[in-house]
Amino acid sequence: MPYKRPGSPYWWVSITPPAGGKPIRRSTRTVDKREAEALEGQWRAQLFRQSAWGEEPDHPFEEVAAEFLLASTNKRSLPDIKLRVGRLYDHFGGFSMNSLCGKDVRGFIDWRRGHGVTDSSINRELSILAAMINHAIVQLEWKLPNPVRGRMLREPEGRVRWITRAEAARLMQKAEEMREGDRLRDFIELSLNTGCRKNELLKLEWRRVDFNHNLITLESEDNKSAKRRTVPLNDVAARCLKRRASWIAKYCPGTPWVFSKRDGSRYMNPRNIFQAACKAASIKDFRIHDLRHTAASWMVSEGVPLADVKDVLGHSTITMTEKYAHLAPHRARDAVAKLQSQSTHTGRPVHAIESLIGRKKRAV
Image (cartoon, rainbow, N blue to C red; front, side, top):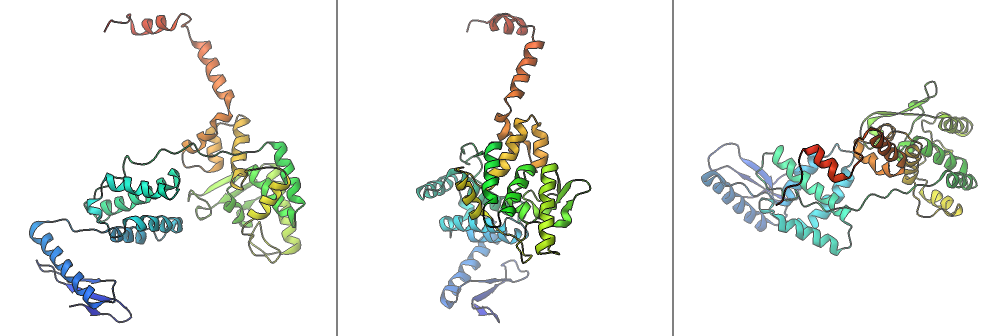
């Protein structure tokens, strides 16, 4: 019979498996006793089928999602995970994951598209669904299908918006004219000369700055990749930090933050004043993250190898950096020039291939 536990508003049940063993104590998550009794009967019958016939227990979406969320509590991306699990729950709530199939995944895609959601956002949600199922399969050894495989949507090429050096100079000039604009100007210039993400700079502490070796160290908890990395400082970046140090010494000595307010607290979000500076500089469709794109674009355009750009930006794979490859046409020209200088095939293509394979084309 259902019973109440101290401190819990819900009815609980204690069920001994048919083959014996430790009783299973479980919350019904309901305050209605009759509903709790019905759930108890359902669970007893399910346990009997599992024991007598070896039937795989039913795992509703809520159970799979809850197990995944509990295993994700230490992830920095937990707020995003919760948001996406919520979207999945809106559609799959009450659904048995044992019977999930491709039709159900397509139904979710159609439902999200019907709400005007982009394919890239749908893919982020599907990736969480796949991760939930994989966690249940690998960690909990539940026999569940994973029909998300092979059903991710094709996404458009990622947005790469960058500005020229002349536009950057104009932006910094307008930024400096804003209220406390010297801080915004230094933020922009440091972003352009390090390629750091917004929060990597806004959370930067002075103890991470090494003027002796012209480096800043970003600890795993400070950056998106969750790996420690060092970022070299060029002369411009070093001057920006020294200007910040002078400002700190004048207004809030002792603050740990490189970008701080006058009271020593951390400067949280320059988005509004940044957009005002962009408008004043007549620069359209430009976001704070595009400063990072601009730094990468400038490096690639100057001939810096993609592998080196990857290290500076802290990308986990070279694939992420390759979206800037189109800005280095000289690499393609050099490659073609080398092909020309080393090639001995000066005749028609048909002669070259027949020479290489050692025969003419055969009739089919």
